[in-house]
Amino acid sequence: MLVSRFGIWMLSCATVVLAAGVASGQDYPNRSIRIIAGPAGGGGDFQARTIAQGITGALGQPVVIENRPNNLLGEIASKAPPDGYTVLLTGGSLWSQPFLLNVSYDPVKDFAPITLIERSPSLLVVHPSLPVKSVKELIALAKSKPGQLNYNAASSDTRLAGELFKSMAGINIVIVPYSSNAMGYGDLLSGQIQLTFGNILQVTPHIKSGRLKVLGVTTATPSAMYPELPTIAATVPGFEKASIGAMFMPAKTPEAIINRLNQEIGRFMSTPEAKQRFANAGSEAVSSTPQELAATMKAEMARLGKVIKEAGIRAN
View 1 (tube, rainbow, N blue to C red):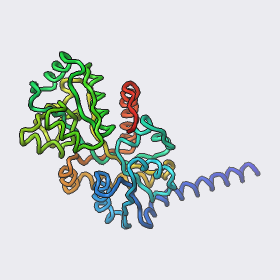
View 2 (view 1 turned 180 degrees about the vertical axis):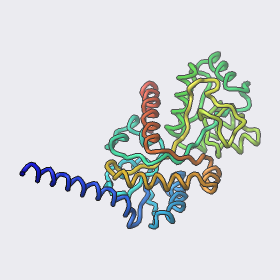
View 3 (view 1 turned 120 degrees about the horizontal axis):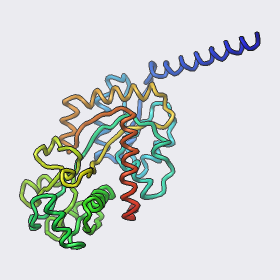
View 4 (view 1 turned 90 degrees about the vertical axis):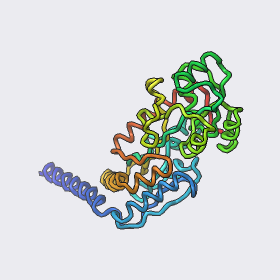
């Protein structure tokens, strides 16, 4: 009789826990949600505000933006309670930073993926004086002049693109680090630097004016913004280096809440409004399942971690 009562008690507890889990999704949200994003005026801030406006109505609660320094986003979000009211919007720095400097969080264990939100390709551009018209010709030139071609990089993301290209193409090009993009592009436009992997919005005006020559796009498939432009991967199989935007919650956030946000964000990201606004900012609006984001992050960590280690890259 004691065993029977104990079994009934355990079943009752399981029912209560299950009911609580369902309720957490059904009752969510019942107060404002905060999105932790990068500094005001930056790309992450724009993405956060655009998405907040797009999902507030469906959620029935305000979605507010909390701007923090980019290098602290993971640290702050990982310490937030897993109650569904703190969302992290970040880029690949979340999972590349642990390779570059000491951080207190684990990008896999301390966060629950929600969805990918954007993919931002870079363009491989060269100074017009360089006698090449394609990625294949650039590689051939670099092999004929090892260590004589330079590329600029004002961020670890740009350097990663350059180091990945060097490694996969089997060439020796030299990084010239800069403290700002403005300085790096100035030297590229003057011909002191021969090439770079540039942000679409930043390099497009110079391509149109003829001051830079574009050879390829860094995404694995052609970009919707430059559909006629060949991919670098067409010449260097497997090459891919795009800036990725994604949203996470602290680990142990209830699955029902994760799924609710995934649904609402995904619905908005598929709208013409979201696609146009992101395109105007130089990126492509996308979405994914939480599982697809987790797989993307792990694949990026494995691929880029190897490049970072081999090149000895550290944060500035």
